[in-house]
Amino acid sequence: MSTPPIPQAALLTPQPLEWLKGCGFFLFAITMFATLDALAKSLVHVYSPPLVNLSRYTVIVVLAFSALLIKGHSLHVALPERKLLLLRGALLGISGTAFMPSLQYMPLAEATAIYFVSPLIVLIFAPIMLGEKVGLKQYLALGAGMIGMLFIVRPGSGEISLIGTALLLTSATSFALVQIFTRKLAHRAESEQIFVYAAGTSWCLGAVTILFFWPTLWPTPTDWAWIVLMSLCGGLGQYALIYAYKFVPASTLAPLNYFQLVLAVLYGELLFGQMPTLSSLAGIALVVAAGLSLTLPMLFSYLRSR
Image (cartoon, one colour):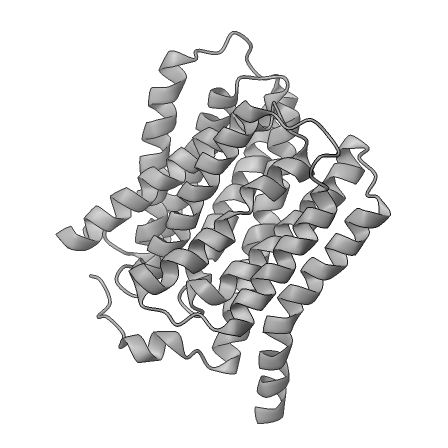
């Protein structure tokens, strides 16, 4: 059964310990997503993006149903929640389906940076769809993160793919709404139920897509192992993301999304030989500072209370 709704006032004022838990889960989630993106970029340059995407969700479906069985929760939810779960799953499937082929057109760091208009979309929709109060502090942190993003990407320094950009903007908008609906469902359905519906719906969308783009090359056993590892990162990231929104409002977590951009730059250097410039390093420092400006005050408050 679904847990009863929690008063809105309680959702909007997390305590320091809850804040830290939420941020911890969220930072773990985006670390997993950054690792997934790096592995996916290597794979989609060899294999069909729909194949990589469907393979990912096949593993995640197994993880999701395993978590549901271990926790002993039912798949049944009330009709209003079921509609939201299916909508969230469809948006997540659209986000993944659009993001995978975009990596064929764009460098990893640049692709991730364009994708990160999603935190801004979250801050736009959070007051409208969730009734959350977005303060000046969040907007300043978001603005600092976006400036840091521009330092890293340096618009005009390279050729931008219009197809890649369109795919990324579609993916970013979809994922921003996924975060909104995750927060909306956080206390109306069990985490494992949210996980299962998202995985199942995304898998169905991936299966339909691959029918139109049937692969001509299939992975080797070694590459299947990399696909499984990529999928595990995605599954763990999705699970942690759901838990993060049980503790902290979506508008508060939005600026922390930019830490994934930092990881994308680092992975770009380590895996693809894309050495960060001084401008990129300055951007990374600004992104980190923006994120810490939100988390450190709550950490100090928690330590004082202890």
